[in-house]
Image 1 (cartoon, rainbow, N blue to C red):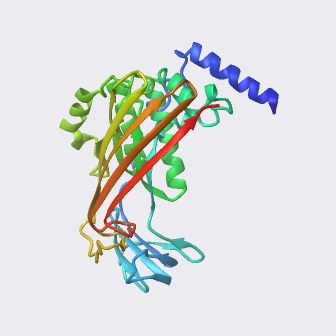
Image 2 (tube, rainbow, N blue to C red; image 1 turned 180 degrees about the horizontal axis):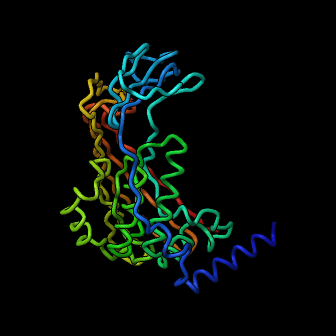
Length: 320
């Protein structure tokens, strides 16, 4: 075990020093791939968990899919011409949603260690700066395969390593080829200073031509930002952030209760704003305080005890 850990650390040091070597062959993923044509399917006699309060669970239920859309759920459905899939002995439920995933760094799995200098942040920053566009593709493609195999059909790809426009394009190509529904949030590349702005020009480039990237609207474009930071002194710093999240009902009938209950097919949004302050006494000891305010409008896929929430926090950190 100790010998294995030592060899892993040696690998990390060598990879950081010789970072021009690709994690995977540069030619990987260059072959163009296309999704199979959409069709019509009927999953028959499955135990269907609808996640709809009015429909409940359906033992021996059917699910009719046409051209990538669920058009009917219930027992004994009729779907002439549909390919029938035997659902006996299986559970069918809506796909899971992963809300925050740095998909590109799936290639870095098992490369961080127990010591702080070999933790996730220094490892991803140290190796991430040497990633090639083809490796962005490979990491994201691996992550999407893992997601779909695990029942995750929607992801928020918080991409914080688009070092060049080509890096962003290859990351998006992996999302398109997988057929997954995703929010691609363009963030600052690993290892760049906190004072350096994200590549807004490249985000504008993607936005102008997003139709060609969106994979028939399965993909949407977002910004993965780090908030606002202001250094009052070298030791005293202020932070601020605002986030907006939106849930689309995809034109499905829904009964939404903004007073607390949620429904997966509601349409709603959430506004969240926060401010915080930190003071660094020395290299080991710091203190922090902050407050977050959030408000929900309409309905969402998960319930709230209240639609407006104020959450204060205060504490101290000691780094051993």
